[in-house]
Length: 203
Length: 203
Image 1 (cartoon, rainbow over the protein chains, first blue to last red):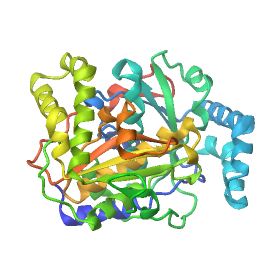
Image 2: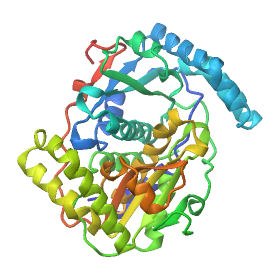
Image 3: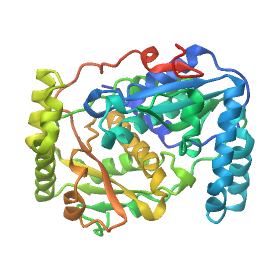
């Protein structure tokens, strides 16, 4: 059980996590990546079966190929889909990231789900919490990260990484030193998304 | 950006989260629940569209009904499925929880996904991280929680809570004071789930 100090520290971190699209190319040592993965593997999973798998990509050619897969998905539909919905400035940011920035992160952690260790219906509930722990651990170490499913939709990423048929890529998490500090995240108020006992009864 | 102290505190919390099946019935004030939800709503989501919704269930009759829905799912297949895989002791724990314990938590937060705010393909990736933040925030406050999809599979939970057609329950998180302290979580070593650059290349 944690003391009051730990709890308040965690709160500060939970409410200040941001998506870092601009990362410095400085390499990260294995020890750092292992700490992130240690945190990831302590997320909960159905029956504690831990159906996650991580491919830690630092090889420049593989990163570039992942960047191309993401860029193709972006140009193939996601770009037009997002343009209407994002502010002009955020759209420009995301566009730059999806067409080059992603590959320039020093590490891309591809978080996968292993269907041989999970009922398919609980795979997402058992893998995305681990990926979130990974991002939070990065934030705790002063690193930037991002949670992106852009490259995971088609078969290309699985094929590039040589994943067996029972393993699927579920999210790509680029990690590195942030290129710049970001403002606090913007969120809708809790009460706008919360109901009391039953849908429609205001919080 | 956080200092070194915050980072270490977060690590201790990330690696000590446990599934608490036994919770004390003591009620939790609104302020506490709001803190948990504030943390939940600071998780990342695709395009920052925040497609989560929370139904905070404290009403005893509704909790009992959620308990019945979970128990029916448990008896209707999950129980036999799990019996072969869990240790005898853990199975007995889960069995007791799934057939009564769940409903006795003072608060059940039903975390939902809102398809009107998300591409269906990115809904899980945008909602489960928020649910994980909720559990971590509970842990930070000394509360116990659990991540359960047992009651979410069929139509009964959505119907009980009056959810509109575009909103689906994705995980139920019981929260309360832990009835007892739990030992540290057990996990497979990071290296057993991690590959370097490509599947099959040992970390």
